[in-house]
Image (cartoon, rainbow, N blue to C red):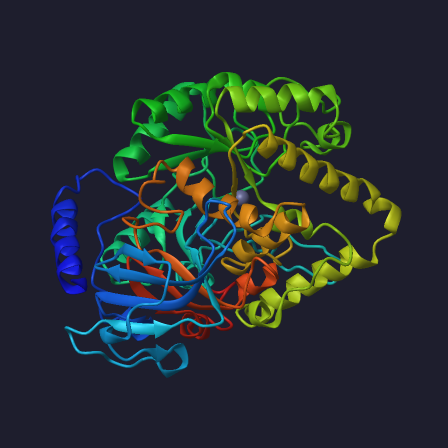
Length: 511
Ligand SMILES: [Zn+2]
C-alpha cells in the first residue's frame, strides 16, 4: 500500500514538472545533483522516511511530537501522527548515515532528539562581502567601499544553515547571480533556490562605486525591463533613488508580475507606499518621514535614525504608518542581525561562524567590534533606543496583520555571515518577544507567502516540496538549537551541513 502510494505520487509529480514554463522562476523543477554537488549529499534516495521527528511546521502552531514524514521524489507525501509499522524496513539512526540503500528500499532515518523545520526563506540574503580597503584598528579605511562577490562561499553557507530559498535583495554582479541560479538549478552547484534581484536601483551620489546611478525615470524603467528580460525575478530600490524613478521602476516591475522592495532614504515610507512598493527593507530603521531637514528626493543626513527615535511604537505616527502598510499590503523585512552589530557588547560570533571567515575578514570584524564596545556608553544610548523602538514597531506591525519577513543582511561590521545570520535573525525575533514558532513562521511561511510560493514551500504539509531542515534539539524550547543543523533537504535531497561548512572554511571574504 505504501509502495503504490509512493508510485502514484511520483507519476503525478512528473506531470507537474512537465508544466514548467520557460519564464524565469524562483523554484525550478527538482534536479539530480551532479558530480560537483554529490560530495555534499548525505541522503540521495528518492524515497525517504523520517521517523520519531518533532515537527515545527512553519505555521506558528506548537510542535508536533514523534511524527513520521514520508518524502518521495522531492515532495512531502504524508505525515503520520504515529510511528510507521516496523514492516517497512530497518531504521537507521542518523549517526549511521550514509548507508547506501538499494534503489527500491527507502532510506529510513530515526530522528529521535531532532526537530524538523521548513527550509528557511531568507529575504535579505546578499551574495557578497562588504570590504573596507586598508581598514585599521582605529576604524579608518579608504574609499571606495567595496562589496566583493562571494560566489563560491555564499550559496554553500546559506544551504548549510538551512536556507532553501533566498532572495539576493540587490545585486552588484547580476549576471553572476543569474548564472549561479542556473548552475544551482541544474545541479552543478550546491545552493538554495534563488530569487535573483536585479542590480540596485540607485540614484545620484551613491557611496557604492559598483552601482549604476539612474539618470531619470526612463532610465529606471529601461533598467528594470532589461534585467527582467535577463531573468531577474525581483528588484530593489536604494537610498538615493527619486520618487519619479521609483514610481517608474515599480510600474515596469508590476507590468511583468515582479515585485520591488527598497532600502530607502531619499523616498520616505509613506511616499513609497503611495507609489505601490511591495516590501520595505530593514524594518523601521530607514524610514525618513520625520527626519529633520528632509528634502524631497534627497537622502537625509540621519538616514532614518531620527525618525525611528521619534516614532515610539505607541505614537500616533506609528499607528498611521502601520495602518497604511497593512491596508496597502506592503511587507516589511526584518534584518535585525545587521543592527545588532551597532549595540555595544552584542553577542560575539560563534566559533563555527568565525571559522568560515578569512583571517583578514576576522581581523576587520574584531576591529569593528572592539570600537563599538570601547566607545563611550552615552553615544550608544540613542542606538539602543532605536533598536528597542524597531522591535516594538515590528511586533505591532505583525499584531496588526502585517506581513513581516526576514533576512540577515550580511554587511555592516562583518559580523553578519550568510546562513549563520539567517539563524541569528530567528533568535533575535525571539528576543524581540515573538514565540519561537512565530519567529520561525516569519522566517519561513511568511517569506514563501511574500514570494507567492506558499502552496509549494514555507511550511511542512503533505503535497509541499520537501525543503526541510533537521536540527538537533528543540528550537521551541531553546531557540539557539536552530544553529544545530545536521541535514538540509532541498526537493527531497538531503545535504550534509557540516561538509558544506567545511568546504568554505576560511573563505568568506575571499570568494
Ligand atoms: Zn542589504
